[in-house]
Length: 224
Image (cartoon, rainbow, N blue to C red):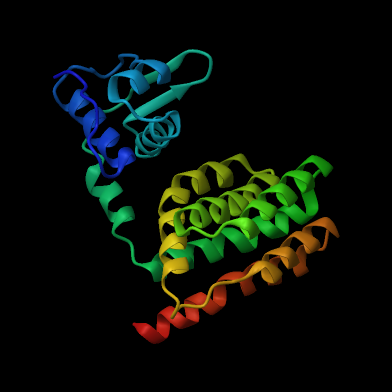
């Protein structure tokens, strides 16, 4: 089976489906190196971020293996879609409970380990978040800020796990912006996180990160 341009809808999901079909059909056998990002973009007619998210997702579930400087190889022919579908079908409460766990630990570590470059990048990301109005743009900007905090924590495993989770978080944040009945942490809460990280106050950073997510979680509990 050859790769085909994806149709409208979720580009990442469509790329995942086609990649799995390549593995399941034997077109990409275990041990094979798959086409590079540029070639996949041309064949599927999607953006590089969509390709990267799909590869990252398949790497997390053990289907692909990324070898830096060499390429991406097929590691397993197992069907990853049941696991990926469970992530996609997670409720808003599930998503924000996971975000709370990530954010608090990441903020504490970032306060201890951050660099001046980290602070400058977080300031830029927070500015983009504050300026975002469209729900989809807001979801992307907000999730990028949270990813920036995780990256400043200096734990590569935490960062990679959050990158896998970010796709679902981004969608949930967009829904949150559209639903006016659910409280959304405004600029002040996020600036408090950044201020605590800048001051290298780990406990204050953890508390500020928790205050960003907890109001939404409480509202979701009341709805459910």
